[in-house]
Image 1 (cartoon, one colour):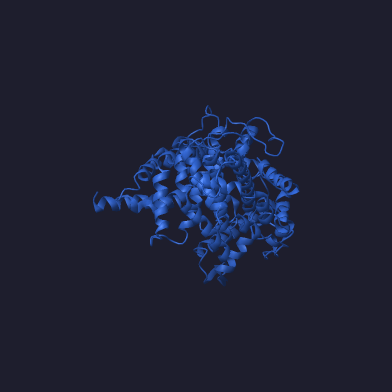
Image 2 (image 1 turned 90 degrees about the vertical axis):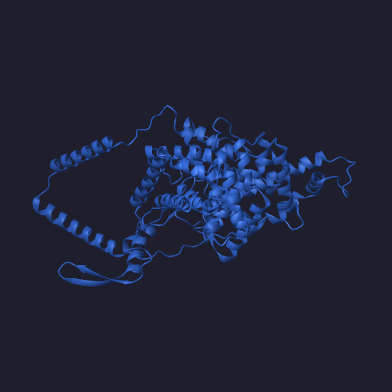
Length: 546
């Protein structure tokens, strides 16, 4: 491969990256502009699938460990980040059962677009001729509306972008001029977007929007969760997430999800191992090619594929109830809920043998990966970065789920890896686990509901995993076992786990007034929470009562 070939490949990959990263500089709180931007991004994903661009990424991912391709690894990571931007891995994994195979999605062709435009134009002409108003009032109102829209467009164009902080000279009708600060103008448009908590707006925000004045900071105890109200399908009941029903029913949304689902299946099976090993080497040697946000991007990509695998190909399995009561619903909704609940299964819910794709996901289940996550937790807590911390906790929750799958796997290699990781994380003299620290640092009015759902789910799976391992180790050890001189590493880990007091560990690390208050606050959103989140909260209180 010549230098010209290398530059050509790099130029094309940068073009793909730039196309996928296109987004409006500022939507000014307009939900319509945000939907148009997302629709454009989904159309680009479908087009890349049809034009075999995703296949090109697959070929590069398979050969990324080769010396001539190792320079493309970080660029490929950016492409994956923008490709999976604003996508819910649970929705992508469940798109195959939400859309029946016999349903054909109409393809947008130039002829169809032209016909739709002609029909829309005819409809507008017909409605304008039917509804008539007096000429004087109509002309005055129309002139005033056009004048205000023209002035607003001029102001929007003049502000360039959201980071411009200078003073603008605006020309108004009649030869008048006025000086406007760009930062003040943009802040007024930000207040147009009313703040929502878990999808519900308040009257105070509506009043502040009308008067263009900032809203007062609410009491942390009355509003324990922050954020725009965006919720994922994993932690919210069916229909409660902000992915509205009309958006979910859109043909382009379904086509984009199906395209991503197929891409994820092929990528995890063929490219996940080489790409992740190459990226981990960059972080391991602290490469000077890394930028400040690369670790956050890397965590989100690993989290996406882990959660996608957890819910992929699980439509035919039964749901499991660890506390009591099954998922309610009928038809398609019940099928989807069963799949989601199955993803939150506990160890005593049956044998879950790791499939072929899980073998590649294990490449991000080593001691280095856990150390990277734990060190990031400490750093983000110290530097007070709640967004980065929330993404890191989401990844840690998925890694705990994968650790559980490895523990119950029939593959002896996976089982041995799981026991070794558990020994380092929980049973070592200086345990690596950061979950008690995360629970103790939670304060109301600082984090989102999604962050708290990840903490509760991670706590539940961790405690179940420790209980099951303690019972297994006690039964595996006989009375004749020399606990001071174990024969091998496996026997040593079994002895250490059998001597671990999980009840004292729970009372010392997971019981406090603050942690109980945290679970109560999350339980107060029971109508929005998914069934398995509510069951995890109930399981915590049941364990506490024992």
